[in-house]
Image (cartoon, rainbow, N blue to C red; front, side):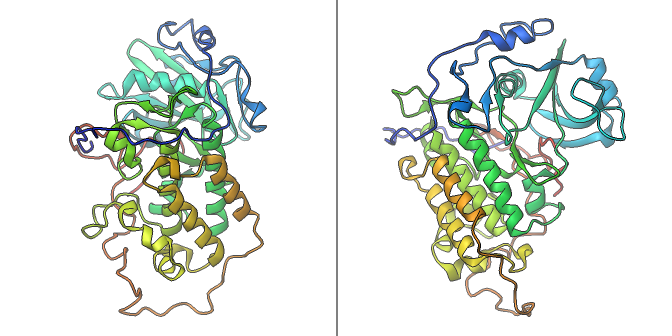
Length: 426
């Protein structure tokens, strides 16, 4: 399931504490457990180290709720909602288990033309190595964090050995599916809208939380192409004001994990920024962060793409073919340069997410329009002046790299991911 990173650097890389919209200073732990006391023991869903003040003081579009308002579902309710977890209701699958499409009769309102609200139900696989800890993390974080660019957790179920989570349904599925799978291709303005939304969600989280698993498959898209960050199983509260980082077991996804985290286990807010930079490159190129079908030395996108991000002509050779040349060259180059700063090897040299968001919002509001090609380019034997990264990139890309513990040995990866919207096809 990953690469063994057992060796540690003798000395940790020194990095300044990242800029964020605020730090967590106190623990208020009882609200989540109080809301779930009828089904869940208070020892499981406990400490939520959020600041007592609401996060909307620093972000008008999001807030830390004073108490969790999650619904406690019975297993029978969710079994009925998913037609006994029928195979044709499966939306995706990952390390935690399968995600099913369901329909519930509830206080969340009625869907037009139906008898209830369409939801996504994540069911723990009894053999899952992620299990209770990640289930608890989802309840703790999404039960209290509210933001337009975070997927909404509606409720949960814990009966006997059954652990389930119920989310809002995201009609367009994951960004990964649109970039690499059979989802509808995304034009430039939609890509920028999605990445701006994801940046807003991550900037909000960085007031208190290190997300730790930012990647295209965890960015879900609703019917209006609004992006929402999902899957908080690996999220952790950030370091105190007196510290620059956390020391943790190395977890995450190959191709997106920051180099300092892999080398030392030191986790910074700006470790998330590195993963965001990788997603920016994926948005530009349509290439996966990790693809073993590419030629030697090019499997890991971040290892070889940097020279292409610094030069306008080189960038043009790696832009996603599915854009068909219809993108604004200046905005694409600015996006590439932003991605390059996010991929800096030292955390202190990366921008914070509020800075990243500011630049992306400027690009979104730019008057530069996507360029229309004069003619459809003729296929030639020398289509790219530089070695083409697509030469070994099969349609749809390599199977998705499932989230995993990077300290564990390699194991086969699933072709599906735990996304709340739709299946990821490879």
